[in-house]
Amino acid sequence: MPAGDGDAKDQRQYIHQLLDMGITLSDGSLVPLTMVATLESKLSFGFIHRKNGKRVVEVKAALDKKNLSATSVFDLFQEAVIPKIEKAYPDVTITAGGELEQEGEVRGGLVKALILIILVIYALLLIPVLMNIAYDIQKLFCRTVKEVSDIACS
Image (cartoon, rainbow, N blue to C red; front, side, top):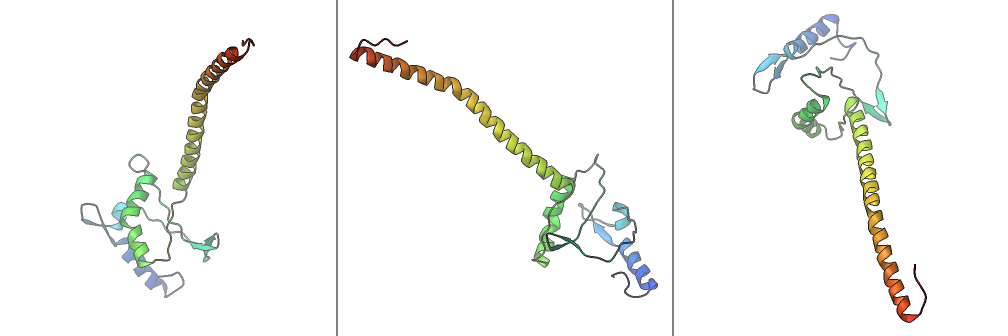
């Protein structure tokens, strides 16, 4: 229920229902939301967030890095939740942000650096080969020139 609708009693009832909401675990069992998440209530201003002219809703989570990584959580989210949301709401686009977005930028930079390093190594390995080919061409040229004239090649 959006803030400002109904009276305080209705809002308390809605929050109570949210706290008692059942969450399905991987083994199929249901547990209350409060067993798997810590919830906190915050006041927020009533405005719409936009990024590049599109309406944005942010979902944030604090993860225990010892047990979960942001990548693994988002991968699970992509497998289980995102297809259902996209099927129900075809106009919705879901993208990773925050830590995952930064990780993607770093990974992209590392891929570019790796390609550059491979090209530099290839060029360094190619130099002796090209020098050898040039030497062979020079020898062939000198042999051909000696047969035609008395010009000395060094």
